Length: 174
Image (cartoon, rainbow, N blue to C red; front, side):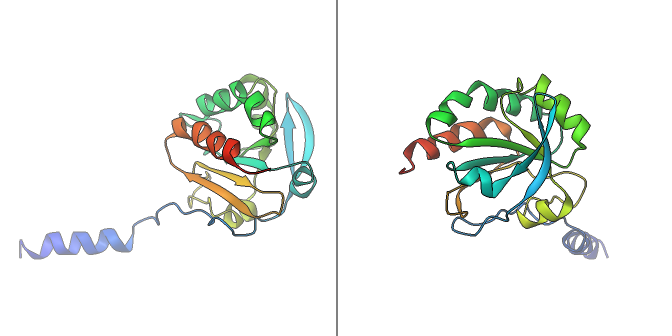
């Protein structure tokens, strides 16, 4: 009987396991959206198709303004915004937080330099960043002007998102 317990525990663990984070593949079409956001505390509508007319778009999904690493990631994107702009890219942060919290986050943690948007369940599902709770996975995308995913960085550790996304953009042909 002792031998049966570990096997049963493993099987139960597999049945109730949360799926591993996933992300859209490079080359997949990015879901288009027009959603509420804020920059520097000012409410705005963020429209992906309009942004793509100007160049590539970096979307960084983060779990929540209240989850460890999100403030640091916001700071790092803000500190490097000139480098992203020099590469021709717009930067947008997204989470499932309410717009009021995101407006404060945009001002306090991102220096009001780029917009932060509120992603609903349809959007997080469309971008395959739904962690099956009220949060998103920590995933960064570069969307090319064609509207297709050009680069994906899917890692719970915020520290490599800016570096890897920026390196891809700087090497990307224009």
